[in-house]
Image (cartoon, rainbow, N blue to C red; front, side):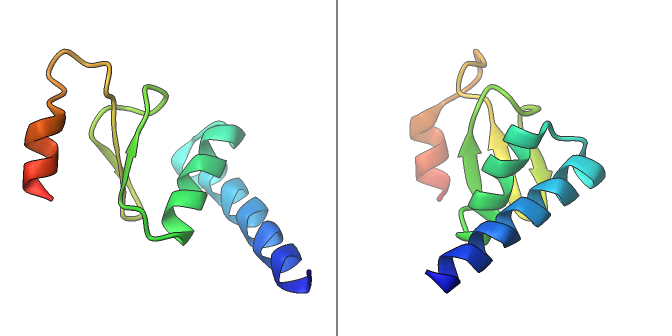
Length: 76
């Protein structure tokens, strides 16, 4: 249980950093830091600026007319 508490604290502190440095809302910062700490480099979300990058995490809006999942998967 101690390891989980430390991980949760790290997510909270890093989310606060995301709010300060990247101007994310707190809840969006939670998504960003969870992806970053789990080495997930791509997040599909309409809540972030399309094709933006923050500390190695790229955000792509799947609702944009130019979104092409097949092309994106072929590049990875």
